[in-house]
Length: 63
Image (cartoon, rainbow, N blue to C red; front, side, top):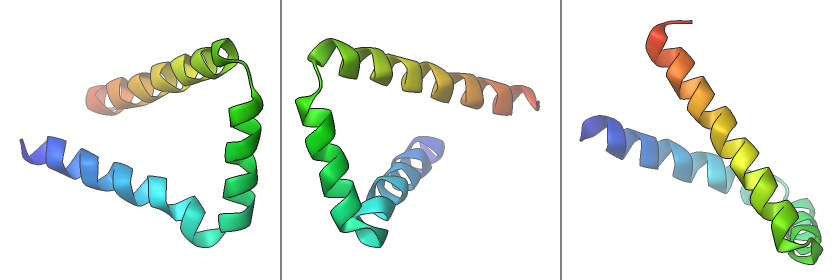
């Protein structure tokens, strides 16, 4: 449970960095994403999730 809470905390920190550091750029990127077709957003999100899982898997194996 501790690892899950830490993961959520780190996710919140990382998600909040860009709006904190570069809010104008962040907002413009959100508008660009909003203009993209849902299929492109879905494929990109899938790729990011797969990459994240690969990083976590690699970290747990000690690579």
